[in-house]
Length: 90
Image (cartoon, rainbow, N blue to C red; front, side, top):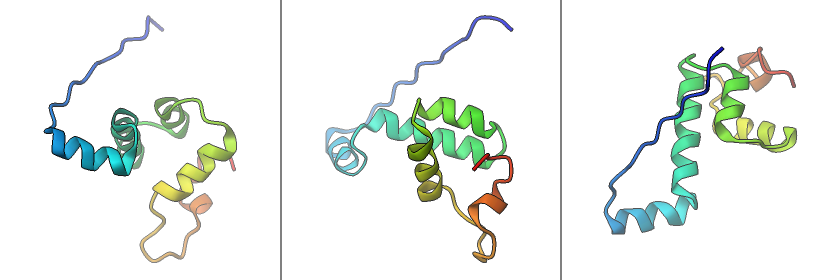
């Protein structure tokens, strides 16, 4: 495996929108990164370990809490999160 490569993204957002979003998300950059990571995971582009790497080094409890809060469960709500995401070691 070679050297890690990183990408930097610049988002131009009007001040009034920045303030509205910042009031809700807090750190906009981290919020955008978390959303990108979540969508990449849901689309199958990254696995759970890569998802965890993208959202930062949270402890196990914080990471699991974040998964429960931010990842959708089966639309019929018949499956639990652990059944829906079987590759996650709970």
